View 1: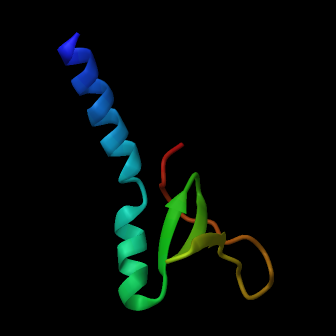
View 2: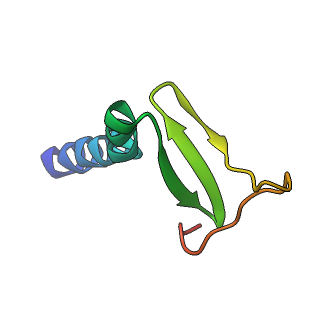
Length: 66
């Protein structure tokens, strides 16, 4: 029973940390960029938004998984 609880606690801690580095970076720089499923996002301290090109199209990127 104890190993199952430890596994659940570890999974929760990992999921809670998702995006924390980008958010911390945004505190110091005002924003940070991340790539998720080939789409570029701008992370701010209060949230995130899709990044657009100057032509108004969604900006794509390499990597980001999913």
